[in-house]
Amino acid sequence: MRRDYFTLDVHDIDWVEAGEQPHKPLVRIDFHGPKELLTDRLTGTDGDLLSASETDVAFRLVDSLDDEAATGVVGVTNRVTGDFVLELNESVEDVFRFIRAAREYGRTADADEGRYRVEISLDGDDLVAYEKQTFLVYDAEGNLLRSESLIPSGVEL
Image (tube, rainbow, N blue to C red; front, side):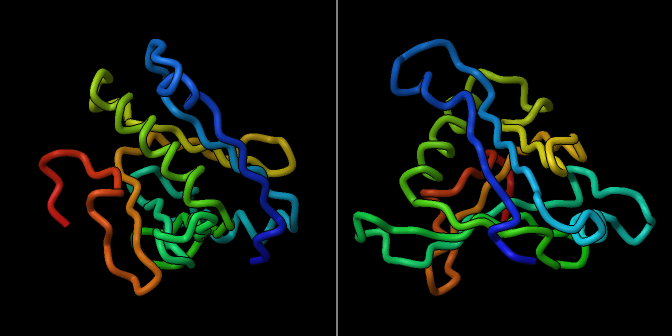
């Protein structure tokens, strides 16, 4: 699936730097491509749309962390099959700002409510919404960067 079919908007992260009250970070991903392409990837083996527990969100660096303009790929995957649902190119700086906000929000939020929310829509029409706890970050060689990832306490990988 082409990455240019997607647009990504992030909300509720500026409060961290401003020292304001915490808000749950939100990622809105809008798909502008063939409907069947996205819905097929978001459908599980049971024929229903994937739930939050059936998906994983991760970021894989393309460049070195030392690179000032480092970029990477945000991916949402089907946890059961391992297949990619979608991928988007993003800057490391933007992703890390989001993870920082989700980490800070998680310190004050109810663990059952998630640390951040992902909403995926199809040409502006809501399709799925996920409350997520984990956001894994990998370097360009595929090694997990634990200190950069959002991993709830008590979770063993």
